[in-house]
Length: 376
Image (cartoon, rainbow, N blue to C red; front, side, top):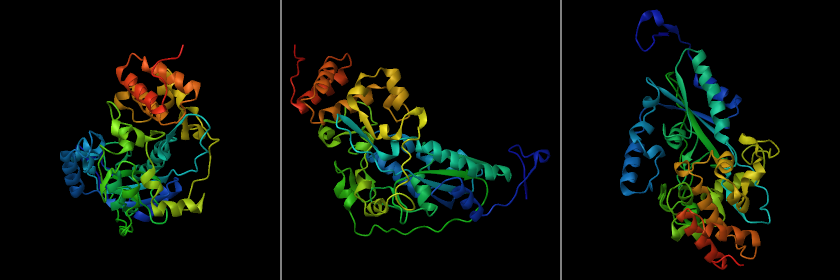
């Protein structure tokens, strides 16, 4: 086979080599992915309809991401002209978290404790290189608004949709980041995985705010994982439910039976990844440090320090004030009203020039049961 360039002139023809699905899957696993599957690059028509419907109902809660342009995020051909196949990879991120320190700390969701997407993109790029060497076009998409990753994973046979809308991999659970290689190569699709949730509804019942309003339907307006990324004041009715979370929420995954079984296995196949917390992640910080954030220390950082440390998170409008907002709510939920550092920090923010932060500090002071006036 031979193909021409986009202009169609024969003098630009390049050789194209055949690639089989087994070869691609093997390459993905060799690159470090935990699971690899293949799907057709046909448009996700039913997913597009769902995104539009839920956005019209307000269930997106202002979230952009794949809701921003459903026509694009459900059509691989919008990212790569002539797309025929998707190679979808899953990379596990579950590691045992260190014990909570005996101080006012904020909890970080497991997926956000280090830049797992950097490792995912690196592995997917190695798969893309396989296609490039064979003369095919290929593009890596992961954690952006170009493609609905979970739909791609479901179609590629990696797993099934749990009732919390996450993809569950058979025997391994949902502690995975997902991404795809879109390619012009035509590959045989993997076999889909049937639904294995049955009558279980632990994720629905275990959500602290009732955000999972029906099997597979999440109301982002109630979802803590989204609310910490949304702009404006943190909703008053959900501040207590936020608890010590500062970024993300793992509750619906932690109560999920397949995840609990995988966790019980421990490190290794089907369970936790081996703890490599001594290895520095992006930016030079240790993974153990990222599981728990010292709230007083964070609230003492200037903008540059805060963004250098946590800037890879999704922060509304890239404004550090929103990370501080979350920290103040977590501080109010810490139960440490007798800690002088905590009290001093809350009082300092009650006098902040930013009215939003002052409001959240007032709430934290009331929640801690401390005076709203700095003691003399």
